[in-house]
Length: 197
Image (tube, rainbow, N blue to C red; front, side, top):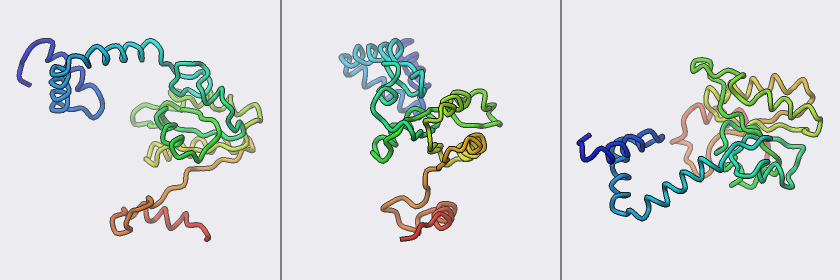
């Protein structure tokens, strides 16, 4: 990178640490902030507020400013629990308005190659939540990656002996897509998981 000033170089370096931000994007963001200095104070203040106020819910481990979070303290179906990998996964499910139960965030997925074992995830806390007998269904909504599938299988083996119904998000061909552009593995899963009309 060209050296403009120490401060700008440091800003670009910090921006590049963000996921999906390369050197060009970091430079573009830095120059945007220089053109609009009124945004700098607001950005700095919001980052400070996030650091000081945002934490994980002590019940479900979602991101919150109030503990417990609005979902755990609200009027939700306490018999249904949806297990997700990361807090942002809750947003995707909530946008659908299809699930009215509560959540449990694992804070990741099993990945032995990366050193992520059950001890690094919120699996012990999940099992503790299942002890009360109130939860009758656990919807496993981990990603459809190798790690997500391994995590789903691991959780299923732990939960099934508790006589709790374990379900998995359906997967297949997205609405609005053309079959000719869908990969073979997705088509295979869609055919295997077909339902009667």
